[in-house]
Image 1 (cartoon, rainbow, N blue to C red):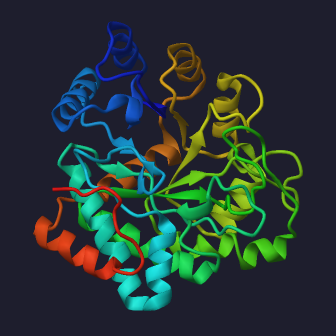
Image 2: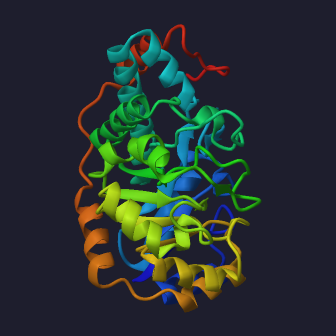
Image 3: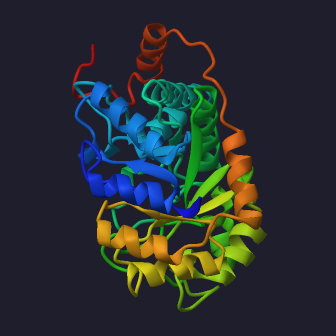
Length: 342
């Protein structure tokens, strides 16, 4: 296996994609809306991808709710954005945490029924006034203790449903004044304040199995390199101050925040201390370039990857209909779906 996760272009594998997956052997696979038409089609695609790889490779998706939800009506329910859980939390802390945990448990039920076993959730970013809205209502709140508590409840709900969580975007994307999909965010906040706010939201989540990096420069720690490709930030902040020892993956290596070719970016992320490189757009030329640059999974990276997958478990029993009814009750006054789901 090689130290990367890849997407594919469409609803079914092409001959070229089959050959690439068979030869390159990525550690994992990621799905987007372009890959989704119906539950039956998606199950076939997942089954085929794993069949080509010859193993039950981990399959990831970004299923947060709100703006970032790859699966939605009419085949799957809509779920609230993160701020709605924060609103429920503000009304009643325990009710808000119960809602976040149950919402994630219901998402996990949707995913596990398809064979998807990793969700890029929870978000522990702490937005500030004036930040780019790329995080915005995806965040649970603006106070690190509240964000961490809700994020932990979401992670617990996913785990109970047999789906592994990936906390993002470590060590924090909340202060970014630009969207890292388009430009490189540069944060000039001093280290003490970062540790009291942005980084503090991730510290209680250090025991989660996986985390995704932020393509953000923190000038107080590394004046040049964004976290994804900064050995200093990975070593001193992510592994050090925060204490995260799980599998560390990059955010999408094709995002425009990063400089150089995708192959150079992938090599820099691995050199900085990322265990796995994530590539999302399904462009074959980029996939091939990344596969040529990343190493085979070995050493500490292989240990962390195995440790993460060992945490996969069978879903705990859940009455889905009763769970949805209870979820709507808990979220009353904080959120309701725009589209009904039968």
